[in-house]
Image (cartoon, rainbow, N blue to C red):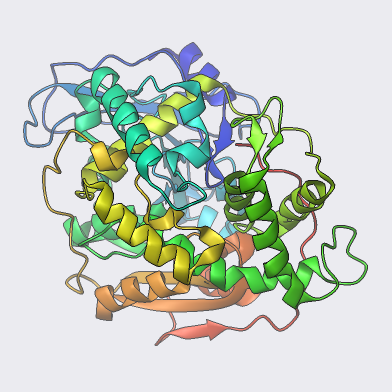
Length: 514
């Protein structure tokens, strides 16, 4: 890949879905049929792009498309780094693992990596990468219809009456498109293969072991890496932790929204009813939940046209999807409140600007490939109808979406292997950090990961609200505990809870894109 192409792809960075940083599309990288099984040392060059730290360097790593055929076709993996700021004190490399699936950490050495304390940046190279399938690594594309790129279609909601017939038809249409257009690579997208790619990156960096900071889905990637390559790990931080249930894996990620919304909604309701709040929607916190449910039901019956949006109407499921997206960070609460107030008036705010279609196509294909290849999903409408009915009855705020049929219900490729089972076998060098109220990865799932890791891990539970805890939506106590571990290796002797002594109300941060 030329430096000009890499620079253009970095300049096209965009945000979609669950607020993960995603890298813009570039010209496809051709998979090569040559190469050896041992990775070559990386050749670094400057990353010419706007908004990047001038110290950030870029390189490309060849990895096998199929690890069962390591001498077969190759694909490229785009990587980046900012070297340790004190070379004489350098300990090693800290890998930044993004969420998703479909998120990239390629720009993170210049971004979130610079939030790390100086004691960590002095001693560690900060390493980012675009996972297999995600541009500017060798990309995949399903060629979906534009309407199917809406988040509420990729993670679809049942019909207002709970029916899944439309979802099953859409799953067949979208899965067929991925089979036609995704090529051979889409069959080899998986969490386990991403972990194997990481180990080749470690070797290409010349490191005996590597530290990691994984966030959201990146915690599952990090846990799988630590399971497959336990003695290649140094200090591992899993932040906003996925449920590792091997029987469900990424279905558990989707189902987590049920409890995540229930955990978070009271915090939103308290904010949305606070006197003096310009986006106040009700006088009492107890009134916010029934108001939201009434509005969603009314929009199910009487959607409001929303020109320029995708989908092109504000319906009940768009309101519910907005709830999921805004609950990821308390600073986004005004987005949901303003949409609720507009819906009460029968109006809509300006439609949010979406990333370029090519970016959405690439990210959707990566997400689909990983989610559907990692584990077998139910294939019949009856199975989803049963699950959706149970979910709607118990968790009305999420209206059955977390157990609904997405395109994995019709995925044409069976899993190539069973999901990696996370166990307590391996070194005790993992620190979990988890907010108590997290819409995407709720505390209940993090506790399952803590149980699975056993003696290998210590968990820091943070009395805070939002997705992404460390240096984002957590608190000073949690941040200090994680920073100390990354800088010195010192962990708490046992699990701890970091209290939020001072409650502060979120400030508006604007509407998230995507």
